[in-house]
Image (cartoon, rainbow, N blue to C red; front, top):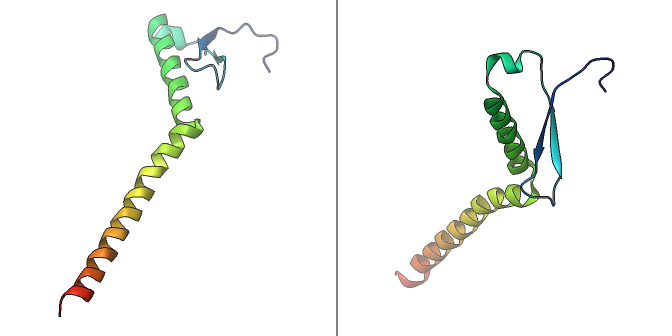
Length: 90
């Protein structure tokens, strides 16, 4: 909660309204002194996009699914190869 202080706010609209409508960033006093308004806005949009990718259930599910599938099919292939040698080589 902000009390008794005037703060500058950046509002970033969500590219995917299923998750959230907008993100609000409270700027520090020195934020605009270090960079232009466009740089500050781009950084806010980048942070919002990173948050979406990190916390979206679909993105995190897909990033975990590939190693699991690779391990499963690699193990199945290796087991098939070993059984093939055991059964068909004297």
